[in-house]
Amino acid sequence: MHIPDGVLDIKIIAGGFTAAAGLTALALKKVKHDDIPRLAVMGAFFFVSSLIHFKVGITSVHLTFIGLMGIILGIPSTLAILTGLFFQAVMFQHGGISTLGINTIIFGLPALLVYGAFLPLAKRWKGRPFCLSLAGSILAGLTILIAAGLILVIIRFSGDEFTGVAFVFSAAHGMLAFVEGAITFFILRRLLKIKPEMLYAYKSSPPESTG
Amino acid sequence: MELDQYAMLRSPIHSWDARWKLLALAPLIFVGAAIKHPLGLLCVAGVSSAMVIISKLPIRHVLKILKGPFYFIIIMTPVLMLTSGGEHLVSWGVISVYRSGLYIAARLAIKALSVMLLFICLFGTTRLQESMKAMEFFKLPPILLALFFFTYRYIFLYFEDLGKMLTAARLRGYTVLRGLKDLKSTVNIMVTLLIRSYEQSERVYAAMRLKGYTGAFPTLHRFKTQVADILKTSLLLSLSILIVYMDML
Image (cartoon, rainbow over all chains, first blue to last red; front, side):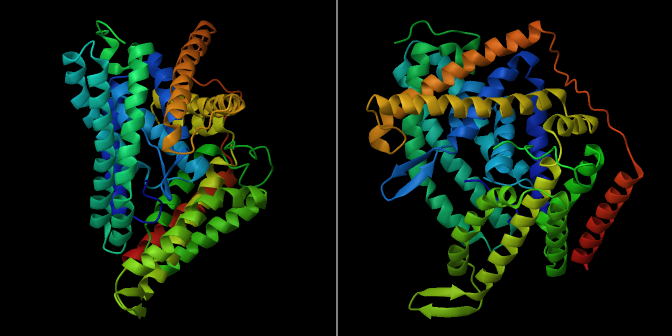
């Protein structure tokens, strides 16, 4: 679900890099050198998960974990997404170099929205991992739909010729939203049980009880 | 697949100072991705192909990298031909195949492949540490560079760990990553991988800090500008400007 090279107009490419630079600057303000390993691990996880194709019926979808990135990393998730996208583009040609900025926005913005929505829930539902995992999974599913919507809008703004393709590919992401939501639920359940301190929202205030 | 596995070869592209190379190729990549003029497109395609030939990179390596955009184009072409609109090529009832779809697909193919070829020349002919150093020269934040470096390292660690875990799971009779029926085993593998890598990264980082790591990239390589670097960079920058001018006419 990345926009490749050659599809976008120069104004959209430039706008994408400007907006991505803004998000990156915001994330850099929140990051210290000690956060680098955590971000790098998640960036690599984001990269590797995009190579995992999950068979659903007659088709297959590849995971993204944008929602999980937002929940685990918070505002700095933009940095991990940016690096993950960079290596996806250069090592496996998912996405593109010129579209790195706009793709960072497509993935980074929903991740931030999820973080913003998850943070108050994490405070309210301390010690209720099931509710929290369910909320996280619904938010993760929604991120896919938001990202697909963003792709559609951006390509529409860039010109008419790719609108049909964008519609076809965006429609296919309904299934991905479901699969990713389901997997995020189980991952969050396990993380809240085994290592809740990995979640950004829990860093400053660990849960009262887990299980 | 390592990004810089052929950085030790000798060619005029390899000997190009990484800073000047970045200065010349980065604008050309963007010009190549955004250009609309057919002649400009062919110009970028010609230059990128010539540079790959001059760089003496193994053709098998280049084709392996180009496989990704190529498959993407193969998938896109029929969709574009059915959805792009304009003049009909053939029609069967409500389904129409449009001529413009073919033209758009060809343009997309040239753009995507040219950009990737330029990128191979940029990062495939210089050691990653030197490329990072060049980006540092252009004031990319050190934290971002360190993050790029660590992520690159962890990608290989993830692949290694994932390979071992998948083998272990299969030997125990589990099927993973095949579909929704394998959800439980897949999630178990992913969570274990995530937590194990997270803990390992913290240990590695602590060890690096103890050994004096401060976020800087110490390399023995020293940049040295030569006349040839300036000439190559000027040539490609002029070409980028010319193509943009051609596109604006």
